[in-house]
Image (cartoon, rainbow, N blue to C red; front, top):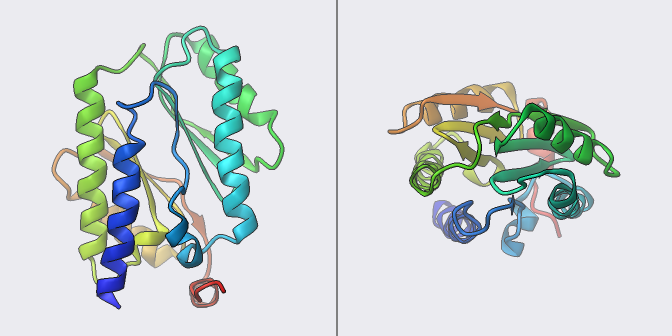
Length: 204
């Protein structure tokens, strides 16, 4: 069981590295690894809509922002997290408005910073932190690493997923102990332990 978890994690980690912010200025960080779909606690419909939200949001921001580069859009169960850096408060508001206009978006967590484009060194450090946090979550025997999405921006780690309160607290604790992490922000959607058991069943 643990071996299977490591294999699926390795696939997810590879995908996250290939989609790192340093590779593409405007990033849509979606659950793109098909092999993990059956293990995801979201419905297949929600997984599809999350990917659509990310792609559409990225396209809209190219028109809405003066300097769209450096913005990351992450959707999980139709809840959107905006991270990255923009040139002005107007751009920050415009980015949120662009996402709010999309269908199926339930809520928006706007963590954009008005600092301009991040440096390549910062982006590389964030990618490394994300990989270390994912590895630490995998090593935690009491967590299912594949159900937790990790996003890092300027040393701040954002955790998303459908989890119980116990899982959320444990994941935040694990992430906070990883080298380089300055702050941990939880953007989880909480479910009961009974719901965890139900949604953790592999999808056919």
